[in-house]
Image (cartoon, rainbow over all chains, first blue to last red; front, side):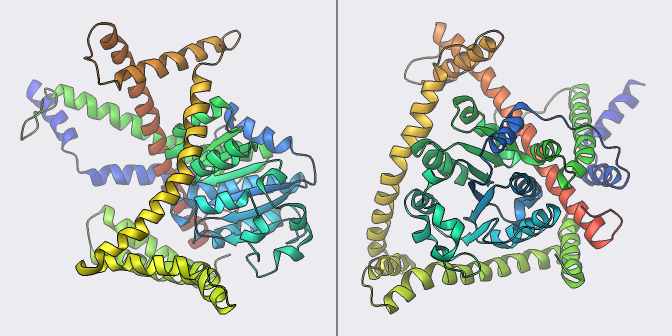
Length: 285
Length: 205
C-alpha cells in the first residue's frame, strides 16, 4: 500500500507539463463559453482612480498617455477603453499620446470603440490624438514645457496650433489630471516628472506584474489611484457601469487561479510525500 | 476593426505560437521569425518617419545647423561596429550618459527617495489605520536593516534583519501572485480573440 502511495506521488511529480497546459486551457475556455458572472468588487485603489476622474470639472482637458503595445494590450486595452468612456461620459476632453511605436493602432481602436459606445465623439472637438513620439523621458520633460512645440502636428497631420482645444493647454500644469496606462518604466518617469516635479494629480494603470511596485506611490500620495492588470480594469468597468473584455474575463481568471493554487498545493504535498527536495547537483543545500 | 483576412492571419499565427506548448515545431519557428522580422522592419520605418525625418532631415532641409550635432553624435556611435573606430563611440555615449544623469538623478531623488522617506516616517493614521502605518514603518526599517551589510547580522541587528526577510518574502509572494494573474490575462485575451473574433462563438463587446 505504501509503495502504491509513493508511486502515486512520484507519478504526480513526474507528470507531463502538457497536461497542466491543457488543464489551464480548459479552465480558460469553459468560463468564456459558459459565464457565471462572478461578482467583481472594486478595491479602494481603483475607486480612488475613478474618483480622481470624477473630481475633474466638466469640460476640462485631461492628459492621457497610453504607453503599451500588443504584447500587453490584454490588460491595458480594456483599461484604456473604460477610462476613455468615463472621460467622454463626463464630457472631459482627453489629449492622448503614446510613447510606444506600436501604440497608435491600438489607441485608434480604443477611441473608435469608446466613442461609438458613448454616442459618438468628434476628433479635435471632444478629444485630440497627438500620436507617437520617441524619446520617453525627454518627451515627458518636454510635456512640462511646450506640448505644441513637441507635437507640432497631431497623429492625422493637423497642426496642433490650429486645434482650438490645444490652444488651451501647453504644459502639464494646464491639465487638472494626468492619466498614464503603462507596462514599463515610463510610469516611473511620469511619477518623477508629471506627479512629483509638476505636482499634477495622476492616476496610473499598470500591468499586474508591475502593480505591486507602485503601491508605495499610492501610500505617499504621489499617485491618486492605481488600476492593476485585467482585474483592475474589470473593477473600473464595474464602477463606470460597463461590461467590457475585462469583466468578461474575470470568471476565467478566477477558475485558473483556483487551478494554479490546487496545483501548487498538490505539487508541494507530492514533494514532501516523496521525501522532500533532492540536493542539487553541483553543491548547494 | 479587423476584417476577415486580418482575423484569419492573426488567428493562424496565434495557433502557430500556441503549438509550442506541445513541442518545438516549424509552425512555431515560422511565426517567431515572422514576428522578429516584421517588428524590426516596422521599428525601422517608424524610427525614420518619427525621429530621423522630422528631427534631422526636414530641419536640415530648412537650413538649420543644430541638428548636425545629434546627427554627428549618432554617426559616431556606429563606430562601435569596427575595432579601429570603436573609441570614437565613447564620446557619444559620454554625452548621452551625462545628459541622462542630469535629467534622472534630481527627479529620482525627489520622487523616489525624499517622497518615500517622508511617507515612511509620517504620523500614524488614526484608528485601525495606525496598524497599517506601523507595519509600513516596521517593514521599512527591518528591510533596510537586512540590506545593511557593513555590520554582522547578529544580536538586535540580526533579529530585525530576519523580520525584514519576512517582509521581503511577503512582497515577493504578492509580486508572484500578480505575475500569475498577468500571464493568465494574456491567455484569456487570446482565447477571447479566437472564440469571438475568429470563431464567432462569443457575443461581441
